[in-house]
Length: 255
Length: 326
Image (tube, rainbow over all chains, first blue to last red; front, side, top):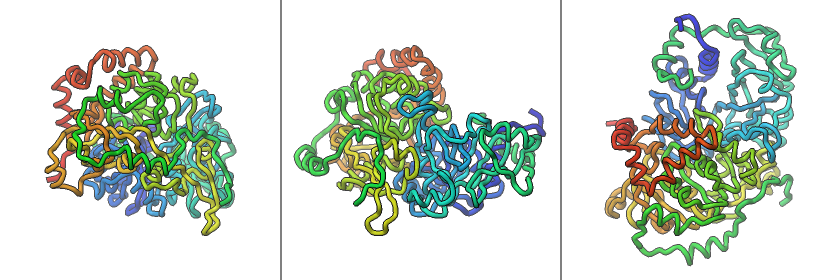
């Protein structure tokens, strides 16, 4: 790979990393969020406090964790406690951002990670919620990271695992979820999306280099709202790519 | 209190808090008894067909793998199982041992969806999957640990998770807002792996505690496997490190490298090729069977397993361990 080329996954990690705010607490799940958090700490958010659900808080992310409970999730950390501590911390409003993934996402940012097809006779059994539902319920804002295609971006998820805005404005609060919480962004392999504050529906925010609006729409199985002005995501910088390839994932687990 | 919504999932393990108190009064000795035994003895004595069982922590981290393999070896069937798993529950699924699941997450983490889970659930071999989030299953154990019938939580609300769980939604009698009630979960058997224990079952954990506190207090029978068996004086030197007191424990199994191929904080790291071997072989039912033949059925016990893995691999795992900062 030449210095100027990059993969979709690398770009997606960079886009996610740029969304971390310095000095905030953040629930990190296995996979892309871990790489994004590491990149953020090394670039724009050096004082990020990563929280891993099984108990690690404030780890110094020197090496890529491969599991949400492994020792790297509390390496030089401030606390190695248990899942009740982290989840209760989230439930009482201390976790700012949560990163999520799923097999399907709908216009309201609801995610599915339980089954494709009928629950009791599934076409595909997926791993399950894990902490996903909790992260989506408790964190002040969530960011979903998704492969972008029309099978995944669909009008109705087969199984609503992790709450986005549910059925629209006011639905989270009506269900009993904490007010003022919900999805903020969707980082996909094609674009960055946010949510319209009036309708709570997903809206295109910014395109990746070389990606067209038509391509995004063709890869989205529901009506994606258009912004007043479309932003452009800059390509990964040479430094971001170097950090990713040399320091964060040198063994190429993800990139 | 008005019930606003009820999950349609089965309450696989109904609770009886008074019976649990009575059990703890009459069936859990406060005497200091030497509870050391082998994996074989512990599993044959306390795990039975149809029991409700859970493991802690999970698959690649402080997991009771030597006990999980022994459960497969003894072919304990129709198990009703809770929780999150990677390798341990995947082995049970592949061996056809699991009948019902209170499932939170069974996955191979970086390696994705476990083919064994897919085969077992999609074929109907697992009769039912009742859905819970990680927090909610742990809070169910916490309720049992507290000795109360349920705990309120703001998890699973508004989703299909609630619908396919056995939780209920009620109006908070104090404020009128909607809240989920999670039923207490009392396990028939729990198995937990720790860094060190004495012969009576006093256990100390290093690194994250996962849900060891909650599960250990929510079990009728608790089997501990420990990397090291230490004298009680060692426990008493660091009482602040004791997570599980002896009277919760029914069996203490000495299992060095008991979490292998997973890791043990400050003792050994994970063995990626060994984990990958299961990931690759379990992609087909035949491959999974070959793996089980090689690493479980074909071996007598954990000592033979470690022999098969070999000193070099074990030393390598130790070399990659997390180290305490000087």
